[in-house]
Length: 102
Image (cartoon, rainbow, N blue to C red; front, top):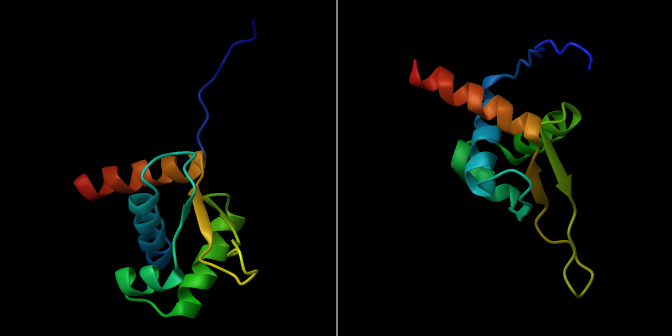
């Protein structure tokens, strides 16, 4: 068997992205859970504009920290997006929580 060596990855996010990721983690609750959350909930929770929340969601998704899906109602109109915090996102959240403790 090949020798295994520990690896680490460093991810830097700004305060806005951090606040949104923390809010998503609190709403989603656990890895591999998908939850529909209206953007206005994030706007109210982290006190940012809707455009800032959208931009931050796109950035977190490009970084691989979250996944998002557009959802539709039975009548075909769009509903709140569904979000999932990825395992990498949960690892970042763990680091955020450890920073907050110190």
